[in-house]
Amino acid sequence: MIEIERKYLVRSQGYRGEAVSKSLMVQGFLTTDPGRTVRVRIAGDKGFLTVKGPSNESGTSRYEWEREIPLKEARELMALCPPPLMEKYRYRVPFGQHVYEVDEFLGVNQGLVVAEVELEQEDEAILKPDWLGKEVTGNPKYYNSQLSLNPFATWKKEEEH
Image 1 (cartoon, rainbow, N blue to C red):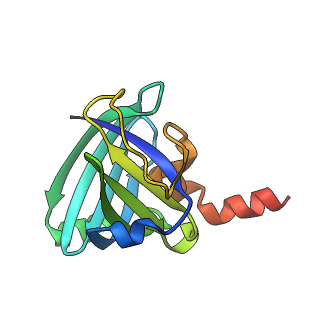
Image 2: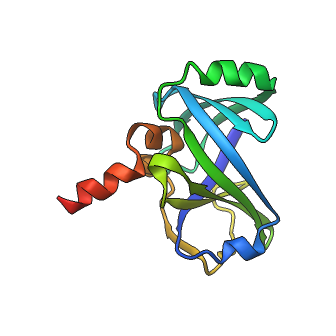
């Protein structure tokens, strides 16, 4: 299956009042190679295994395969993932004809808040809520797999020097 999405920074907490759900997610990466990322995720009492291929040139599309797996197996696979594990709260926010997924990162990525919107087509028009900031679609720095290698906390230190 091809996943098509756009990603944005979030500039205010306005999405919180519009959210229809909030869930805690923990995830780790068995491999962070951009050509074949393999992620293990636990969301609530469910486990998932996801394989993602490389992004296209614009960064909006890539192959994604995801299956729910037993929670016990997800925990076992998570133990094989190198640290740090990624933790975040995900808010689901309907807006217009789409649903934005807003991730508030915790731990070494605390302070980073991004929103993604999945599309049917790359050129699909979307309405943008006022809490949406700069678009970062296609910037590998904001891929979850890369955040596990180069956490947001280190960006601040890099910017200070």
